[in-house]
Image 1: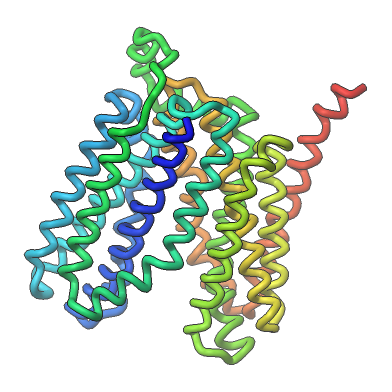
Image 2 (image 1 turned 120 degrees about the horizontal axis):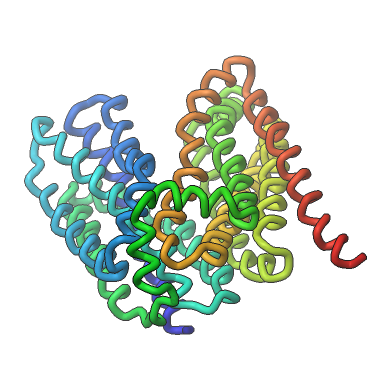
Length: 393
């Protein structure tokens, strides 16, 4: 099982590096081709838009053999990436968007597939640890990959970035082939019967079980409200502290550092307290980060970014681990994909709301996010203590 844990961490490192480098370089590339920052900004939308179809894509993961689906998805993605070598002018810029859209679909499929096969690859007690290590690996790549992607692009143009992005899925496909899986515990007839009303059955498994529902919804609140804070943090840096916008890079690095540390600790905390409590604690830490970032003082903003990275990662890993440990095997693909939509979908709504709220002042969206998170986290913690107290009595 140690071999499988190492392979999944390597997969997170490789895929995180390739996708982050390509996403950043794609925006720069489109800007160079079109001269429009607005058009270039739409590249990010292509990557995240497929998450809206996650419940249906997750059902596909449950319907097909999971590991072969993941391997072929990576191989096909590598081939699709190479089509970007034909882009030479603004007339072909549409192909960049099409490839990024395919990248987004592959991300949803592979994320759901990993959620589904991890319980067959690792003991239940190791899932929290490995989820934490994988998240730390991905966050670590967010510190390295943007510099590498932008540096490659500036040095030799888009060609080496495209070749790098095409090579990464080949490596992850090889890693998936090397993972050793236990045979599924679900009888094939159960999986066949579950295809009827499969989306509804996945929703019932997600929202009908409190052990899954509570940590996923708490994570959704925290992660969703993080979108509310984006405009506030930028406004606090530029207008509150009168610093250049490039200082956001320092805050991003601070958040990444917090995420790496919290990912390494998440497994131990989950083993002691359980997903619901850790999700609530993560939400509280994120709320503290919002309060710290609302102060027009640079050290406080750095501390707020670190706390934000710690809290969001704890909430996310708690939600992921709850899905993996509490969901029947034949439903894992669709429940995992649907939980991704639930946890990350609210960000798309919160970002424009934060942009509107910042007109009232830089601290308004940050304080609003903290005020909305606190009661959710405290109620969850109170509910988590009740069963333990009842058992003790």
